[in-house]
Image (cartoon, rainbow, N blue to C red):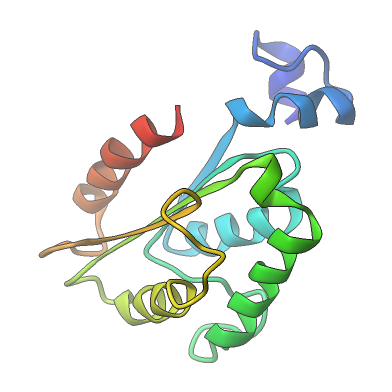
Length: 153
């Protein structure tokens, strides 16, 4: 963030941690496939700098790895992060997406199913989009971006 925001005109008044945190409402992070895993990690580590998150075709691997997703433990951790960091008050939004024909859809669907059972993850903060017929490809990513970005900014 400091490299980009120190070079280009952005909402941050400076690259100090305080100014980057103060401008978090104008910052989003998203990724596809393993980039989705990275997006979930960004939420876990940098939600005080970023308000909007777009994990596409992947789940949180904070605990576990590919094939050992530990969905409930990951959602417990994310829920606790939201509570501990008062993110309901500060604001956050996650647009989580995957296609019905995506080869890794089960991890995303399982995570979404678990998140949607929790009272904390309301539509104001968490949306799951299941693209009918969507594959693990650029066409799906284009649609996810098209649908999510207007909700972010």
